[in-house]
Image (cartoon, rainbow, N blue to C red; front, side):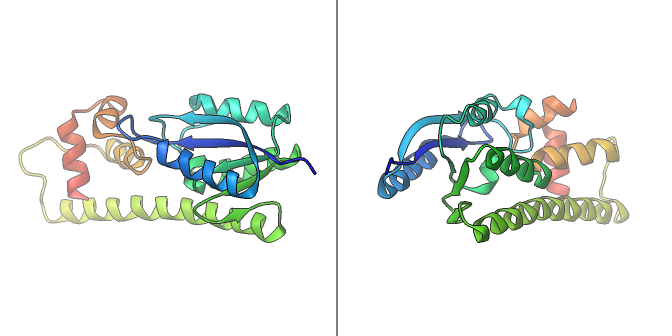
Length: 196
């Protein structure tokens, strides 16, 4: 019987982080299972909330899935693949339609089994729920501070800007990148997050 061909996918949200630990652990698991690593895909400094068009390695991975370059996609954790339930389920559907399975190391998930496929969908739900809960807590904290008159002499930040900051922060972007993308100063981002 031929050894399974696997592709590794790793991602970190910040440029200051590294994918080395993710890749090392995935290589070890592949070796223990007798799988052959045929390709490694790495997105450095890119949020999991970004779509395929903003994640070049993820896009290349999906193109290789279409060509059936490997049998299994391995990732360190479900949140390395994405933060949106819709995108995660779409990803699983895309790879399974080509006969490619998924292995998630942290969750011990192997979608070659029906229970593995069910668990993948549940993990995606929890990831999306966690993100929504963080946003809800932050917005509640800001509303409480506003009700207590804690805005001082600084100009108030619009609710639209606050929501944008909180959304981008929940994806793991650095404060500097959030400030640049939202169009405010880093100190505004810091104050907004601290108030939350």
